[in-house]
Length: 206
Image 1 (tube, rainbow, N blue to C red):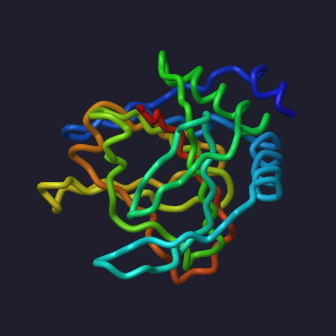
Image 2: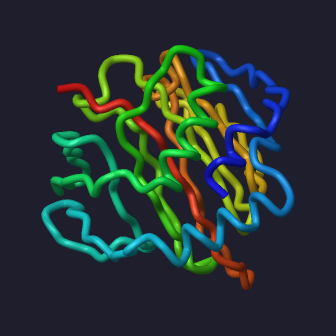
């Protein structure tokens, strides 16, 4: 399974033009039976946990399950919590290799895995702009499973918005000053939705 990840031809990417953002979108990075198999392997193989976040001094359970993987020493802090990485699995390393082949000279050293169990699971407005990610982070977001709307809004002009539905097997690269100028979210849905797995590959700097 992992070896097959390196044999698939690179798909064509699409630039998404937004003010102050650099987005490259691959709707078919992983396709068909390969994407199906990867979803199931990730769902079964990751030790999913429900973490807590601190909002205005109060702890709340995150509305999704997650796990943090990476190179030794690639700890990551967000919402007041420090996460120590689990070691890379062959499956995640293979997915990372495919993503890096499309990301140019970027070498990711960590990944945050999120499992959205249904429409009630979500992530609110935020930017991936923590200090350890550097001033112009490259974030590679891979989606498996249920397509969900990925919404963006400009940080200083909230009326400036963009949304796209990220399909099963897709890759969205966010580069340059995207995190400085834009926020993003996966909203809740009242509709019954199947599970979605999202992998966001990052470069944590020491």
